[in-house]
Every structure is written in C-alpha cells, then in structure tokens.
Length: 148
Image (tube, rainbow, N blue to C red; front, side, top):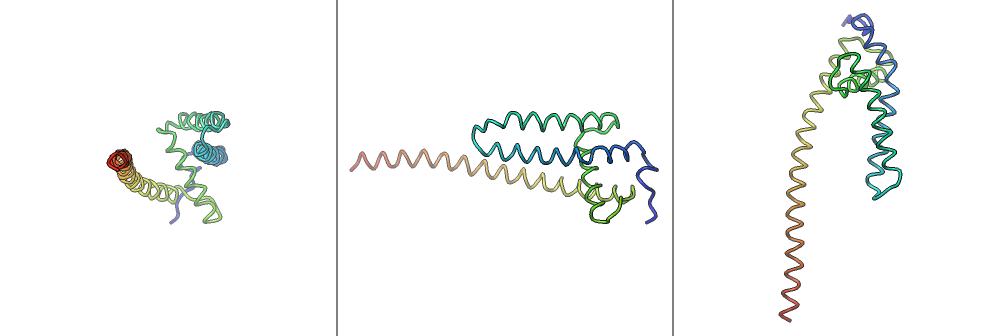
C-alpha cells in the first residue's frame, strides 16, 4: 500500500491529530475518574470531576467544529485510532491505514453497542424481577409469622 500521508490529504486534520492527541488521552483519564467517583456514593469530588471532563470535551468539540466533523466523538475516534496505529507500527499511519482502522473500530463499536443494549435490557428485567420478588419475600415472611 503506497498510501499518501494524512497531511497530503488534509493538513488541518493532520495538525488536529497532533494537537489533540494529548487532549483525548486526558479526556479518557477524566472519564475514568468520573466513573470511579460515581461508584463511591456522594463523593465530594464528583461535581468537579464531571466539570473537568466536560471542559475537555468542549475543547475537543470546538476543534471538531472547525473541521466540520459531527459529532465530536468522531474526531476522538479518529485520533484514538491514529494513536493506536502509531504505537503499533512505530510510525504515523497513512490516510488509507487510518481510514481502514477507523472503519473497523466503528464496526466493532456498533456491534458492541448492540450487545450493551441487549445486556442493559436483560439487566433491567432481572432487576425488576428481583424488586418484585423482594417485596413478595417480605409479604411471605409476614404471612408465615402471622400464621405461627
């Protein structure tokens, strides 16, 4: 494959990838922090962590808007795949390699979303059943105690 560089296809995208790769990394770290803090009930640092992640997301969104990429998460996917390929290959990928990688990642993410939706529906059904049976258990114990 004698693909041309990203810079020869779109110099603005190339510069954005260079400028925003650390921003995407910081966003991933900030999102992980929000998830950890949400697990800890009523953590005082949660509001500031959410605000920090939102500010980083806004920065990425602004740059995506300049390139007319919608939604901004599409730019994040491009940058993440570029960084993945750069680390894997030891050099910057060509535009063809980046395009193929982004297409494969998008397909994988679409399939993962379907799986996640299915699991969420199943979890909701199980939770509803558990709530129902939990209430039924209390009523059953009350009945048996009243009979004794």
